Image (cartoon, rainbow, N blue to C red; front, side):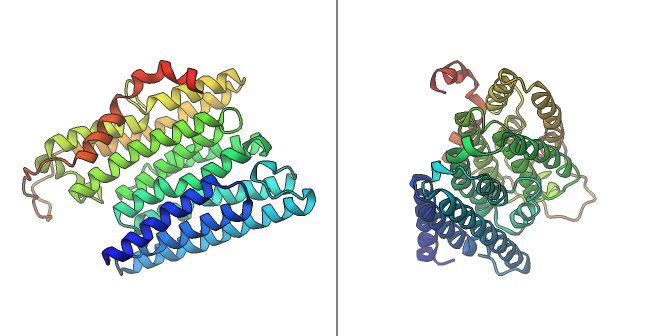
Length: 346
Protein backbone atom coordinates (compact mmCIF):
# COMPACT_ATOMS: atom_id res chain seq x y z
CA UNK A 1 0.00 0.00 0.00
CA UNK A 2 1.11 3.54 -0.75
CA UNK A 3 2.73 5.07 2.42
CA UNK A 4 0.77 8.32 1.98
CA UNK A 5 -2.50 6.39 1.76
CA UNK A 6 -1.58 4.33 4.83
CA UNK A 7 -0.80 7.55 6.73
CA UNK A 8 -4.18 9.07 5.76
CA UNK A 9 -6.06 5.94 6.86
CA UNK A 10 -4.16 5.76 10.17
CA UNK A 11 -4.83 9.45 10.92
CA UNK A 12 -8.51 8.92 10.03
CA UNK A 13 -8.65 5.99 12.46
CA UNK A 14 -7.22 8.10 15.27
CA UNK A 15 -9.50 11.01 14.34
CA UNK A 16 -12.66 8.86 14.29
CA UNK A 17 -11.78 7.26 17.63
CA UNK A 18 -11.02 10.64 19.22
CA UNK A 19 -14.25 12.20 17.93
CA UNK A 20 -16.38 9.37 19.33
CA UNK A 21 -14.73 9.12 22.76
CA UNK A 22 -14.77 12.90 23.28
CA UNK A 23 -18.29 13.67 22.04
CA UNK A 24 -21.42 14.38 24.08
CA UNK A 25 -23.81 14.53 21.12
CA UNK A 26 -25.12 11.40 19.40
CA UNK A 27 -24.55 12.74 15.87
CA UNK A 28 -20.83 13.47 16.44
CA UNK A 29 -20.38 10.04 18.07
CA UNK A 30 -22.06 8.43 15.05
CA UNK A 31 -19.85 10.45 12.66
CA UNK A 32 -16.72 9.24 14.50
CA UNK A 33 -17.89 5.61 14.19
CA UNK A 34 -18.45 6.09 10.44
CA UNK A 35 -14.99 7.64 9.94
CA UNK A 36 -13.49 4.66 11.78
CA UNK A 37 -15.34 2.14 9.61
CA UNK A 38 -14.36 3.83 6.33
CA UNK A 39 -10.70 4.16 7.44
CA UNK A 40 -10.25 0.48 8.38
CA UNK A 41 -11.84 -0.99 5.21
CA UNK A 42 -8.82 -0.33 2.90
CA UNK A 43 -6.51 -1.77 5.57
CA UNK A 44 -8.57 -4.99 5.70
CA UNK A 45 -8.58 -5.39 1.90
CA UNK A 46 -4.94 -4.28 1.54
CA UNK A 47 -3.96 -7.57 -0.12
CA UNK A 48 -6.16 -8.20 -3.15
CA UNK A 49 -7.19 -11.67 -2.13
CA UNK A 50 -10.79 -13.00 -2.29
CA UNK A 51 -10.78 -13.70 1.45
CA UNK A 52 -9.66 -10.15 2.22
CA UNK A 53 -12.38 -8.67 -0.01
CA UNK A 54 -14.95 -10.94 1.62
CA UNK A 55 -13.77 -9.86 5.10
CA UNK A 56 -14.02 -6.17 4.14
CA UNK A 57 -17.54 -6.67 2.74
CA UNK A 58 -18.73 -8.52 5.87
CA UNK A 59 -17.20 -5.86 8.09
CA UNK A 60 -18.80 -3.01 6.13
CA UNK A 61 -22.29 -4.55 6.13
CA UNK A 62 -22.22 -5.36 9.86
CA UNK A 63 -20.85 -1.98 10.91
CA UNK A 64 -23.24 -0.09 8.63
CA UNK A 65 -26.20 -1.94 10.18
CA UNK A 66 -24.88 -1.23 13.71
CA UNK A 67 -24.34 2.47 12.91
CA UNK A 68 -27.88 2.72 11.55
CA UNK A 69 -29.17 1.21 14.80
CA UNK A 70 -27.12 3.72 16.85
CA UNK A 71 -28.69 6.56 14.84
CA UNK A 72 -32.17 5.05 15.15
CA UNK A 73 -31.75 4.61 18.92
CA UNK A 74 -30.59 8.21 19.44
CA UNK A 75 -33.40 9.59 17.22
CA UNK A 76 -36.03 7.57 19.11
CA UNK A 77 -34.67 8.88 22.41
CA UNK A 78 -34.59 12.48 21.08
CA UNK A 79 -38.17 12.10 19.79
CA UNK A 80 -39.48 11.04 23.21
CA UNK A 81 -37.27 13.13 25.55
CA UNK A 82 -35.93 16.01 23.42
CA UNK A 83 -32.35 15.11 24.47
CA UNK A 84 -29.43 14.45 22.10
CA UNK A 85 -26.92 14.12 24.94
CA UNK A 86 -25.32 10.65 25.15
CA UNK A 87 -25.62 10.43 28.93
CA UNK A 88 -29.36 11.32 28.82
CA UNK A 89 -30.46 8.04 27.20
CA UNK A 90 -33.58 7.18 29.20
CA UNK A 91 -36.20 5.71 26.85
CA UNK A 92 -36.42 1.87 27.30
CA UNK A 93 -36.76 1.10 23.57
CA UNK A 94 -33.76 3.30 22.76
CA UNK A 95 -31.70 1.51 25.45
CA UNK A 96 -32.59 -1.89 23.98
CA UNK A 97 -31.74 -0.82 20.40
CA UNK A 98 -28.46 0.74 21.56
CA UNK A 99 -27.48 -2.45 23.42
CA UNK A 100 -28.06 -4.39 20.18
CA UNK A 101 -26.05 -1.86 18.15
CA UNK A 102 -23.06 -1.88 20.51
CA UNK A 103 -23.15 -5.70 20.70
CA UNK A 104 -22.94 -5.76 16.88
CA UNK A 105 -20.10 -3.24 16.89
CA UNK A 106 -18.10 -5.20 19.48
CA UNK A 107 -18.94 -8.72 18.34
CA UNK A 108 -20.77 -9.86 21.46
CA UNK A 109 -22.91 -13.00 21.33
CA UNK A 110 -25.37 -13.36 19.57
CA UNK A 111 -23.94 -10.85 17.05
CA UNK A 112 -20.44 -12.36 17.01
CA UNK A 113 -20.49 -14.31 13.71
CA UNK A 114 -18.75 -11.61 11.62
CA UNK A 115 -15.72 -11.11 13.86
CA UNK A 116 -13.75 -14.40 13.44
CA UNK A 117 -14.32 -14.32 9.66
CA UNK A 118 -13.18 -10.71 9.32
CA UNK A 119 -10.11 -11.28 11.50
CA UNK A 120 -9.20 -14.40 9.50
CA UNK A 121 -9.30 -12.43 6.23
CA UNK A 122 -7.22 -9.51 7.55
CA UNK A 123 -3.43 -9.12 7.89
CA UNK A 124 -2.08 -9.51 11.45
CA UNK A 125 -1.46 -5.76 11.92
CA UNK A 126 -5.01 -4.93 10.81
CA UNK A 127 -6.26 -7.73 13.07
CA UNK A 128 -4.54 -5.98 15.97
CA UNK A 129 -6.36 -2.72 15.11
CA UNK A 130 -9.70 -4.56 14.85
CA UNK A 131 -9.18 -6.23 18.23
CA UNK A 132 -8.05 -3.11 20.14
CA UNK A 133 -8.54 0.41 18.72
CA UNK A 134 -11.77 -0.42 16.85
CA UNK A 135 -13.30 -1.70 20.11
CA UNK A 136 -12.58 1.51 22.03
CA UNK A 137 -15.37 3.80 20.63
CA UNK A 138 -18.20 1.26 21.22
CA UNK A 139 -16.89 0.51 24.72
CA UNK A 140 -16.81 4.26 25.42
CA UNK A 141 -20.47 4.57 24.34
CA UNK A 142 -21.29 1.57 26.56
CA UNK A 143 -19.43 3.26 29.46
CA UNK A 144 -21.35 6.55 29.02
CA UNK A 145 -24.78 4.93 28.74
CA UNK A 146 -24.23 2.07 31.25
CA UNK A 147 -26.52 3.46 34.02
CA UNK A 148 -29.52 3.32 31.63
CA UNK A 149 -28.91 -0.15 30.15
CA UNK A 150 -30.55 -3.36 31.32
CA UNK A 151 -28.10 -5.22 33.65
CA UNK A 152 -29.85 -8.59 33.21
CA UNK A 153 -29.55 -8.43 29.41
CA UNK A 154 -25.88 -7.39 29.62
CA UNK A 155 -25.12 -10.19 32.12
CA UNK A 156 -26.80 -12.80 29.88
CA UNK A 157 -24.89 -11.60 26.79
CA UNK A 158 -21.64 -11.53 28.78
CA UNK A 159 -21.95 -15.12 30.06
CA UNK A 160 -22.95 -16.36 26.58
CA UNK A 161 -19.98 -14.51 25.05
CA UNK A 162 -17.54 -16.07 27.51
CA UNK A 163 -19.06 -19.52 26.91
CA UNK A 164 -19.12 -19.36 23.10
CA UNK A 165 -15.74 -17.60 22.89
CA UNK A 166 -14.14 -20.44 24.84
CA UNK A 167 -16.15 -23.25 23.26
CA UNK A 168 -15.71 -22.26 19.61
CA UNK A 169 -12.00 -21.55 20.00
CA UNK A 170 -11.24 -25.14 21.04
CA UNK A 171 -11.01 -26.83 17.63
CA UNK A 172 -9.45 -23.98 15.60
CA UNK A 173 -6.11 -24.31 13.82
CA UNK A 174 -5.90 -20.74 12.48
CA UNK A 175 -4.25 -18.44 15.03
CA UNK A 176 -6.26 -15.37 14.01
CA UNK A 177 -9.54 -17.21 14.59
CA UNK A 178 -8.32 -18.38 18.00
CA UNK A 179 -7.48 -14.78 18.91
CA UNK A 180 -10.90 -13.64 17.61
CA UNK A 181 -12.72 -16.08 19.90
CA UNK A 182 -10.38 -15.02 22.71
CA UNK A 183 -11.50 -11.42 22.09
CA UNK A 184 -15.19 -12.43 22.25
CA UNK A 185 -14.52 -14.23 25.54
CA UNK A 186 -12.72 -11.21 27.04
CA UNK A 187 -15.55 -8.91 25.94
CA UNK A 188 -17.86 -11.02 28.10
CA UNK A 189 -15.75 -10.16 31.17
CA UNK A 190 -15.84 -6.45 30.27
CA UNK A 191 -19.60 -6.37 29.62
CA UNK A 192 -20.75 -8.14 32.79
CA UNK A 193 -19.22 -5.52 35.10
CA UNK A 194 -20.12 -2.37 33.09
CA UNK A 195 -23.40 -1.75 34.98
CA UNK A 196 -21.81 -2.14 38.43
CA UNK A 197 -18.30 -0.69 38.10
CA UNK A 198 -17.62 0.84 34.65
CA UNK A 199 -14.02 1.76 35.54
CA UNK A 200 -13.21 -1.94 35.90
CA UNK A 201 -14.38 -2.40 32.30
CA UNK A 202 -11.90 0.24 31.13
CA UNK A 203 -9.11 -1.31 33.22
CA UNK A 204 -9.91 -4.74 31.77
CA UNK A 205 -9.94 -3.33 28.23
CA UNK A 206 -6.55 -1.60 28.71
CA UNK A 207 -4.97 -4.81 30.05
CA UNK A 208 -6.51 -6.85 27.23
CA UNK A 209 -5.24 -4.36 24.60
CA UNK A 210 -1.70 -4.52 26.01
CA UNK A 211 -1.58 -8.33 26.03
CA UNK A 212 -3.22 -8.71 22.61
CA UNK A 213 -0.84 -6.16 21.09
CA UNK A 214 2.13 -8.13 22.43
CA UNK A 215 0.77 -11.41 20.96
CA UNK A 216 -0.15 -9.95 17.55
CA UNK A 217 3.17 -8.11 17.12
CA UNK A 218 5.12 -11.23 18.13
CA UNK A 219 3.19 -13.36 15.61
CA UNK A 220 3.67 -10.67 12.96
CA UNK A 221 7.44 -10.57 13.51
CA UNK A 222 7.74 -14.34 13.02
CA UNK A 223 5.06 -14.39 10.29
CA UNK A 224 2.96 -17.14 11.90
CA UNK A 225 -0.72 -17.52 11.05
CA UNK A 226 -1.32 -21.27 11.60
CA UNK A 227 -0.45 -23.68 14.39
CA UNK A 228 1.77 -25.68 12.01
CA UNK A 229 3.97 -22.64 11.29
CA UNK A 230 4.03 -21.76 14.99
CA UNK A 231 5.67 -25.15 15.69
CA UNK A 232 8.84 -24.11 13.83
CA UNK A 233 9.22 -20.95 15.89
CA UNK A 234 11.31 -22.41 18.71
CA UNK A 235 14.34 -22.95 16.49
CA UNK A 236 13.89 -19.57 14.81
CA UNK A 237 13.50 -17.23 17.80
CA UNK A 238 13.88 -19.03 21.16
CA UNK A 239 13.67 -15.95 23.40
CA UNK A 240 10.63 -14.59 21.57
CA UNK A 241 8.78 -17.90 21.86
CA UNK A 242 9.52 -18.08 25.60
CA UNK A 243 8.07 -14.59 26.02
CA UNK A 244 5.06 -15.55 23.85
CA UNK A 245 4.42 -18.49 26.22
CA UNK A 246 4.20 -16.13 29.21
CA UNK A 247 2.08 -13.56 27.33
CA UNK A 248 -0.42 -16.26 26.28
CA UNK A 249 -0.67 -17.52 29.86
CA UNK A 250 -1.22 -13.92 30.98
CA UNK A 251 -3.99 -13.56 28.38
CA UNK A 252 -5.54 -16.72 29.86
CA UNK A 253 -5.61 -14.98 33.25
CA UNK A 254 -3.21 -17.18 35.21
CA UNK A 255 -1.64 -15.74 38.38
CA UNK A 256 0.90 -14.22 39.01
CA UNK A 257 0.72 -12.57 35.54
CA UNK A 258 -0.95 -9.31 34.49
CA UNK A 259 -4.05 -10.95 32.96
CA UNK A 260 -5.11 -12.25 36.40
CA UNK A 261 -5.53 -8.67 37.73
CA UNK A 262 -8.75 -7.59 35.91
CA UNK A 263 -10.36 -11.03 36.35
CA UNK A 264 -9.59 -11.02 40.05
CA UNK A 265 -11.08 -7.53 40.52
CA UNK A 266 -14.18 -8.35 38.39
CA UNK A 267 -14.89 -11.54 40.40
CA UNK A 268 -14.43 -9.58 43.64
CA UNK A 269 -16.87 -6.86 42.48
CA UNK A 270 -19.45 -9.41 41.28
CA UNK A 271 -19.31 -11.12 44.69
CA UNK A 272 -19.88 -7.75 46.40
CA UNK A 273 -22.94 -7.22 44.17
CA UNK A 274 -24.38 -10.61 45.31
CA UNK A 275 -23.76 -12.13 41.89
CA UNK A 276 -21.75 -15.13 43.07
CA UNK A 277 -23.37 -17.57 40.55
CA UNK A 278 -22.37 -15.29 37.64
CA UNK A 279 -18.82 -14.99 39.01
CA UNK A 280 -18.63 -18.78 39.39
CA UNK A 281 -19.94 -19.32 35.83
CA UNK A 282 -17.39 -16.88 34.37
CA UNK A 283 -14.54 -18.49 36.32
CA UNK A 284 -15.44 -21.98 35.10
CA UNK A 285 -15.97 -20.84 31.49
CA UNK A 286 -12.55 -19.16 31.45
CA UNK A 287 -11.07 -22.68 31.74
CA UNK A 288 -12.19 -23.27 28.13
CA UNK A 289 -10.10 -20.29 27.06
CA UNK A 290 -7.19 -21.55 29.15
CA UNK A 291 -7.25 -24.79 27.15
CA UNK A 292 -6.68 -23.15 23.76
CA UNK A 293 -4.12 -20.69 25.15
CA UNK A 294 -2.20 -23.65 26.52
CA UNK A 295 -2.52 -25.33 23.13
CA UNK A 296 -1.02 -22.25 21.44
CA UNK A 297 1.74 -22.04 24.06
CA UNK A 298 2.46 -25.75 23.67
CA UNK A 299 2.80 -25.39 19.90
CA UNK A 300 5.00 -22.31 20.25
CA UNK A 301 7.49 -23.60 22.80
CA UNK A 302 7.35 -27.30 23.62
CA UNK A 303 6.72 -29.27 20.42
CA UNK A 304 9.27 -29.92 17.71
CA UNK A 305 7.94 -30.36 14.17
CA UNK A 306 8.07 -33.91 12.81
CA UNK A 307 10.66 -34.46 10.08
CA UNK A 308 8.12 -35.89 7.65
CA UNK A 309 6.21 -32.63 7.08
CA UNK A 310 6.57 -30.86 3.76
CA UNK A 311 7.09 -27.29 4.95
CA UNK A 312 10.30 -25.27 4.58
CA UNK A 313 12.58 -25.04 7.61
CA UNK A 314 13.09 -21.51 8.94
CA UNK A 315 16.55 -20.02 9.25
CA UNK A 316 17.62 -19.09 12.76
CA UNK A 317 17.48 -15.28 12.82
CA UNK A 318 19.90 -13.42 15.07
CA UNK A 319 18.15 -10.07 14.58
CA UNK A 320 17.31 -8.27 17.85
CA UNK A 321 13.75 -8.35 19.18
CA UNK A 322 11.68 -5.27 18.42
CA UNK A 323 11.75 -2.77 21.35
CA UNK A 324 7.96 -2.29 21.27
CA UNK A 325 7.40 -6.06 21.55
CA UNK A 326 9.87 -6.22 24.46
CA UNK A 327 8.10 -3.39 26.34
CA UNK A 328 4.58 -4.75 25.71
CA UNK A 329 5.58 -8.28 26.72
CA UNK A 330 7.20 -7.04 29.94
CA UNK A 331 4.08 -5.03 30.83
CA UNK A 332 1.84 -8.01 29.90
CA UNK A 333 3.63 -10.20 32.43
CA UNK A 334 4.65 -8.04 35.39
CA UNK A 335 1.78 -5.67 36.30
CA UNK A 336 0.09 -7.79 38.98
CA UNK A 337 2.08 -6.19 41.89
CA UNK A 338 0.33 -2.85 41.20
CA UNK A 339 -3.03 -4.38 42.24
CA UNK A 340 -2.98 -2.82 45.77
CA UNK A 341 -3.06 0.60 44.05
CA UNK A 342 -6.15 -0.20 41.94
CA UNK A 343 -8.90 0.06 44.64
CA UNK A 344 -7.68 3.57 45.54
CA UNK A 345 -8.07 4.77 41.94
CA UNK A 346 -11.36 3.06 41.10
